[in-house]
Amino acid sequence: MLRITGLVLTLALLSGCSAGGGNTVVMLTDYGTRDHYVAILAANVLKANPNAKMVAITHEIHPFNIMEGAFTLAEAVTEFTPGTVFLGIVDPGVGSDRTPIVVVTRTGHILVGPDNGLFDPAIARCGGAAAVYAIENPALLRPGTMSSTFHGRDIFAPVAGHMSAGVDPAKAGPLRTDWVHLDIQPAIRERDGVTGTILQVDYYGNLLSNIPASWMEGAPYGTAYEIAYEGKTERCTWQRTYSEVPKGAYLALGNAAGNIEFARNLDDAARTLAASVGQRITLRVPRTVSR
Image (tube, rainbow, N blue to C red; front, side):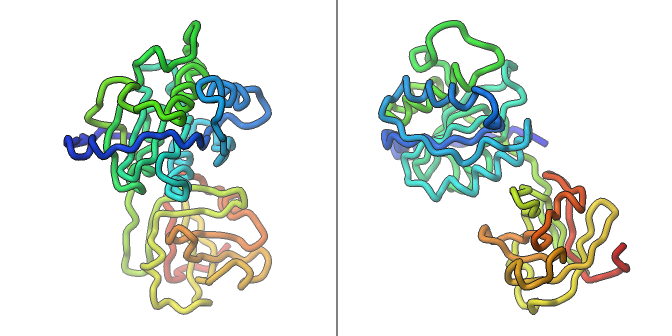
């Protein structure tokens, strides 16, 4: 699911990199909230920058699900002002040879976390990376013994705190010429429909795909279609919003991100379809009787 590609950096880009210093640290993790981990992250941000203001996108990314975390982060990143620091941790490879990084995007947003694909969609949303640095400077890390299983505490939170206080991202460590990219199957148009990848399953069980909603331009609301997924089919309609169908009915619509979303009104489409992030889903002209 992951591939490495090159990043071309020029002196012009590097000279345009924005530093942090806005004191805002936005967190996204798969830590959950029942344990002490999130509080420890906050404590180590505050040790590095006592004036830090922390905002959570979520700590409820499904454990180890890099793709879900990546697209959740990407949806939020450009809503924040340039200079905002994002502390992103979905890190199944913690303690391995994956690289801790600081990314400065072309929009001036700063991303701190593991180089495992988590930041790839956010970088794209920001128009690319102006610079990527490996985190190697011990002066920016938590003092004491380095844990092999809690780099959020020892590396990422302190570095995010320093970045939010205005430390130059270049002080994190050496410049890198690449970062890990997610390998996502693209959406495709077919003779009788469109197929794409499920990028997120939200709290309501709605399935957020990478299929552009613009591909449905001209389709009247209320038109009957069929959802095809993992050998299952369900009848649905193309709608403007959820409430235009009865409770329990399936629908597809264009969501706020501009992509096609699959839903079940006042119910959980992910549960009833047994659907999950990374799998393929199709919206097509009906072929079969729904079972």
